Image (cartoon, rainbow, N blue to C red; front, side):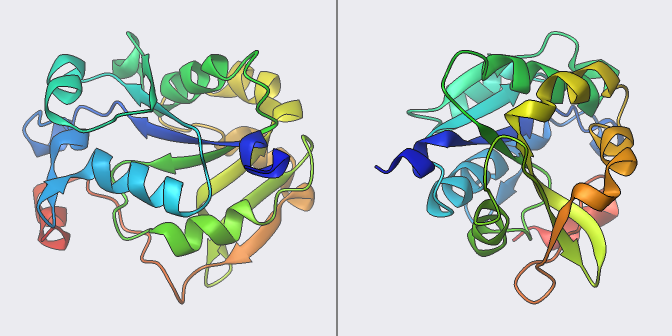
Length: 199
């Protein structure tokens, strides 16, 4: 493993409770025969992240019991109901002291974004000041790569479901956009209607 491989850690946000899905934890929704959390971890690893941290919240006990997350660092977010911001903060906090210099952040409810898009964004890593984002027809989306120099600022401003949005908006000029629309579909699994994307 090269130093570069070890410095970028995959960070999967998988704490969502699926309020608009009848309270079904998103990490446990099945796609192509296995839970979404397994798909996302496999994609992060295939993209080159040797280390993966997974933030759990809704149904954390069930997720631990029913999802194969071997080798991952599991991070419990007791405040998951406050939204994605709290999960991002918990995840970035779990990376302190690990030697990680950047986090490749992925969302569990976006199964249309696979290893190829993640690898493209990860390849944009330069150092701990890096800010890299996937783009779809020029519009910023996920995954995003957040250099360690930005973690404290992101954690301080990540509230509700906005995640790093406010922080990144202020630093738009610093973000390297990587077009991924040719290899990924950035839909979310938020509502019953969205379940049609799952196979």
